[in-house]
Amino acid sequence: MRLCIIGTGYVGLVTGTCFAEVGHQVVCVDCDAAKIAALQAGQMPIYEPGLEELVQRNKAAGRLDFTTSTKEGVDRADIIFIAVPTPPLPDGSVDLSFMEGVSRDIAAAMTSYKIVVDKSTVPVKTGEKVAETIKRYCKARVEFDVVSNPEFLREGFAVEDFLKPDRIVIGVRSPRPVAAMKELYAPFNAPIIVTDINSAELIKHAANSFLALKISYINAVAAICEASGANVEEVANGIGMDKRIGRAFLNAGIGFGGSCFPKDLSAFIRISEDLGCPFHLLREVQRINAAQMDRFIKKITDTLWVLKGKTLGVLGLAFKQNTDDIRMSPAIELCQRLLKEGARLRVHDPKAMPKARAVLPDVEYVDDMNAVAEGCDALVIATEWEEFKKLDLERARKTLSHPILFDGRNLFDPAEMERLGFIYKSVGR
Ligand code: UGA
Image 1 (cartoon, rainbow, N blue to C red):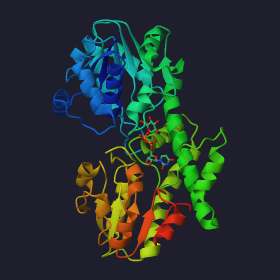
Image 2 (cartoon, helix red, strand yellow):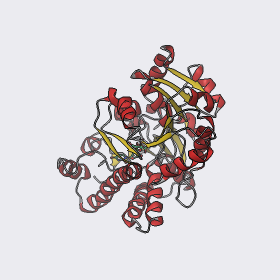
Image 3 (tube, rainbow, N blue to C red):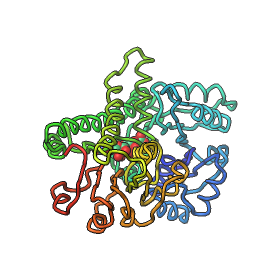
Image 4 (cartoon, protein in one colour):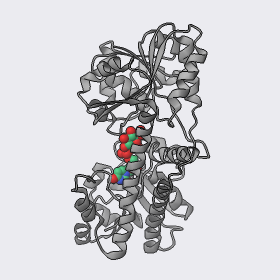
């Protein structure tokens, strides 16, 4: 099938590339000429495991192409995906100006029937607005359908999630685009839910809010574990074995971050208020998430007392493992707060150091994770990178001026750390 994906961010680029991988003909559009030129030259704007190889392969096979022209993209496709940013506004609502702008551009370019699919995360009822806008601005007066098709891709696992989805959600206003959408997704062999547009849009916000709620739930339990001497991991395993609950997203830590959960929570809270049914529970989810970071920092200052003049090693800057994304990263927030307390920082992240330099200019970047601890008063783990589990602990213990490790992601076994001679403080254990 012939597809056009507008927006080559995390979602758009993964979507376009994976559709090409299963045999569709894809053109990706972006207004950022430098990004398109780089992609044409085979350079990746983001780090996402497995993506580069797929881009190269599908480009070489002639199934994946890049352009800055929306007109060209729309002309060359029957199904057009909108995958543009929907950033938060200061009041928690969503900035839909990119959505609106792209809807108008698509409308202006359309000369025959098209299916316009929204992949961006948007407030409920946005699909209606997109349809109104296209109708208003389409001079050619051609027919079209608007579809809501939310994405459920985790950064760092986006290719895997796209190729092996749990489910596909297709929100429509009429039955007309359903057959084409089903054909498009047939290669993925996943259950397909066909529903109305408003429900599809709500599925996305409700899913992300629920996952954030699960994390805040276990973080609140972690505080109770610390106060009572229980172990949050044992509790998570015990409740997670109940199929109705599930073990996923019950890892206590320093709180959730990233470009999705914080933004989507705020947006969902705002939408619920606008609709006259305020979702107070989600405000508590936010409050627990903020408190989680406060508690972790208190743990550090309770142990080290004054941070001014002390040097801390920090492992992890990305908002989670397998990504170079530092947007709303708890690890970055942690660094900023430690710096504010007067600490000096030596930091390392397997992928996020280039992006971190812009927001953390006054820290020392260390290329080798095993060298971070050298001369530090304590070591802090801020991101759940798998490779941190392979840290040379013996070397860290010897090179730290005090063998203190604050583990914000519970990567190590407390008993083993004690045996190795560490003062080891993790979360909820
Ligand atoms: C999230 C959702 O998981 C995706 O399904 C969704 O498509 C995506 O948002 C989106 O809306 O685009 P993502 O933000 O990439 O994906 O990251 P997650 O893997 O969900 O992690 C989010 C944050 O929660 C990270 O900071 C992570 O460290 C934290 N987390 C996650 C925990 O603290 N504990 C857990 O048990 C799981």
